[in-house]
Length: 328
Image (cartoon, rainbow, N blue to C red; front, side, top):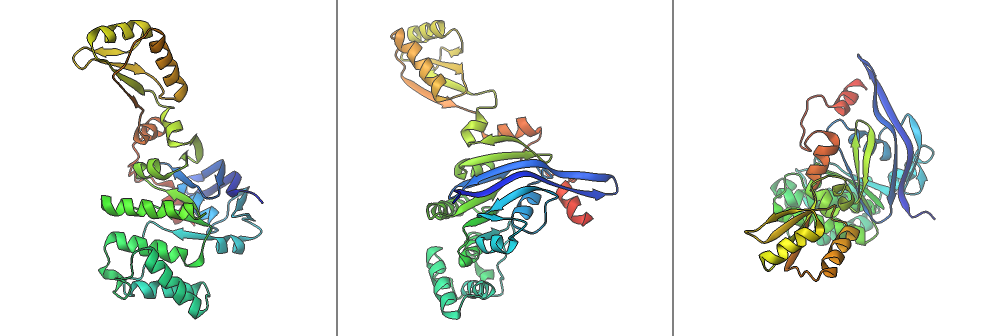
């Protein structure tokens, strides 16, 4: 049995509008191992929404081979739907119902027997710390509580794979951290998370693997640290006990920017283990002691801006995915 939750090869999607054919996905490949967090990033119109819609069976691709939760997407879409959950950016919670009623409604939609539905609802209310609010209208819930309830509703069907869109939108820092904790617990229990977010700290904090999509093509993939090392500007900052050691180190390394006032030397580096080991070995060979060391790499905002040519919060009005929806 494969250990992949998603495997897609040559995924393509286009649509036609008044200007002609518009390619939304241009033959992308995706590999998502089970029980991991995979984050798909990209500017507006990059193709993120289309990708999720295809993988969650909402629309069909024009071409490509896709396996989701072990099932062929085209041949067994019902099995795929039974194995996945989708938690969108905008809460699916019915605010006129109580938290408990929302969960019971979802259990009915999943065709669970009444007794099993009640047991599952009680279990999820406990897990998401919603017991005290269970019989209160969801309209009285805070943003963080509504997001927790929304995710709890997704879990009623015990999905093995969850498409999670903007899970912490509108949440305060404390609620955001709580949501991140819940996501990690799900993964520890064997659930796979396919995360789409414009909040890059969230991807940096959570994702095991990140793919950057732009104009329908994957332009970079890897861990957060892998992506950061693609961007110039990383450095190792060395601090010394006195000016003599600082000057000696500068001479030995033959590079870097020295600051005599702070007794620091900033050495350009990708921040990788190999580069760090080589630097320390050279200093050790000359008996140069360092008082402190820190590694600085660009953040994901820098990666996003450099690779896509636009800031991650781009709100352009020319959103190709919105055009696609309008053209259907």
